[in-house]
Image: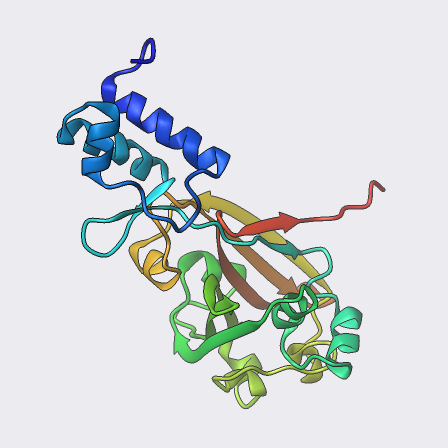
Length: 256
């Protein structure tokens, strides 16, 4: 037994090292309980307690039946929020070989295949979105909800909210991919001159975990971006849910 560790902690430490070294690969099954009982000389309950420690850490996930698997690695998507919604950059991309929105363009440029499931509804916005959009009491918002996939894996949720009166009758009401040079808002005369970003890190809700097929113990970053016109009027509030095991967020900031 390793000094200072209980038997179950010893099992967890050994398996953790095998995962770290690549001996146990992401997506692969752990050895059966019977094999681990023989290898360590410990009871079934001790083996289960050791594996449970790794499940709690998020290194091991439960598969169909009673099988346990090493958490599969996701190739990270890098979100450069400094340039992702640059109107000039997106205008060039839309006029070129890609035709999706800014996110789809960035994923395609990274050599991956984007896909989105989109729905549009008129809703009462969440409290922080209602406040960000400076909506009147009782006013409704248009919400474009997107589940975003990369190479057919769920990677992010992105809900964009707009004051209803601004986008009624525009392509943003259509439940499909829409794009225009410089962005769809700009194409209908609503130009975002600046953004305000907020990032919160938390555990996912049950619905978020289900939509994104998140293993246990996976934190998410909730990125809220509010876009304003030149007069400071809020035009859109986008709330993006980014699982911590498959994203990197990048900002480039001028020192002056």
